[in-house]
Length: 252
Image (cartoon, rainbow, N blue to C red; front, side):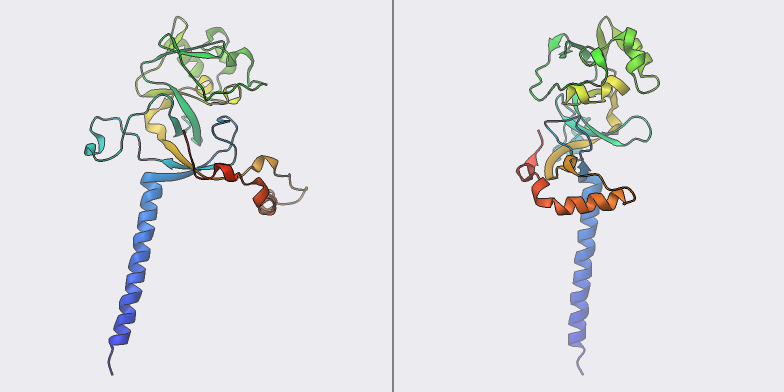
């Protein structure tokens, strides 16, 4: 009796397994080295990014060395105006998303809400100002040596501000970036906790692949599991709270 059918079935099964393994490996490679999913948790980047936006982050875009990627890969340096995802510089090192405002070597100051870089006003069409602010007049001007110990939220940052301020400008050190939220009055950013180190930058948001208005979700009743309640609420209002106009929108 011929064993050919069994051999064919075995070969077909092996092909399926091989294809599945390749798919899994490529998916793991992509999420590890190329793309990463990220969800916007706060209003600090409104109106550019909204609470409930789900992003694909390009981890493949930034390279600092000339000729990185042998000229074949789309690497470039971090630029002013880039939106970046990065690790918060202090424990628990959660991921933040902000916009790069100051580059290494820049002299930065904020006067009456207007950012100056190297003594030149910075055009910022993306920013919004919405009261109430987080912390009084500190929102409108920076740096303020005399008041800064009140506003710094991380140890050592107030001392760094004093050390790095020359006249009324903050000097940004090498390999450091000054990042701020577009929702300028409601963003805890570099003004509060310090610089973003280059090694902590994960990538640049590329695409909004899904957006859901979770801000209108109702609170669970006492005794209910918050996670179960939130999941059921999202399911029940899936169509009404999905922001269909934001799907597959590129982030700029």
